[in-house]
Length: 90
Image 1: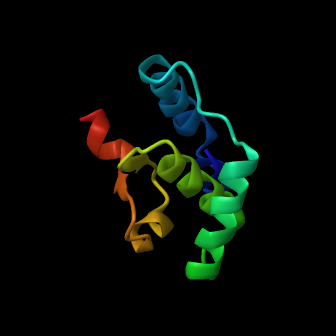
Image 2: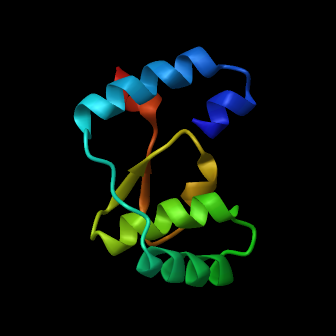
């Protein structure tokens, strides 16, 4: 959502978010364990923004293999795969 908001494409971001909530109706929580993992992610990838480290930590702590995001910063993280929402939409 942040990327779409930042690019002044909020409507498109809201549309994608609505579709994602249908696919994934129960978002995963951000726990203390997730924050600790985010700290480790930031140490390994200092160019990463903190919110991206938190999202990465949620993926890792829940044993997931990918994140759905338009944010290409996730491409730098070797521990996860990024799925582009535009590719999923087709």
